Image: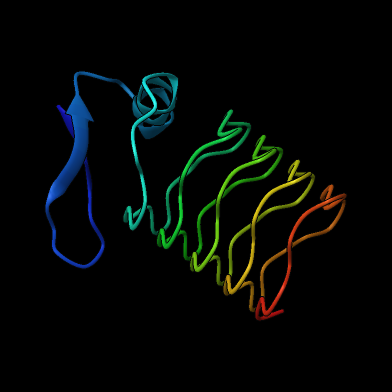
Length: 120
């Protein structure tokens, strides 16, 4: 049983019988779950399809999002410090007020992304 918890309260946001956190997230997104404020610190989400996900305020510090699809995702106020976003698709994503300090954005698609007040 995997659980995704709120980074501030520790409350379970989403859970289920999945082998990987990527599988849990895919199921949550397909069901329209609100993943805002989720604690995904250090998660290996390489190549994950997180397109359109609501990850507003999520903690993705040091997460591996290399090659991930985050197109149209809401990452406003998210903590992406030290995250690996190399080659990720962030087209049209909301990164307003996100913390991207020391994040690897090499080769990332940021076309149409909102980077207003993001910490780069």
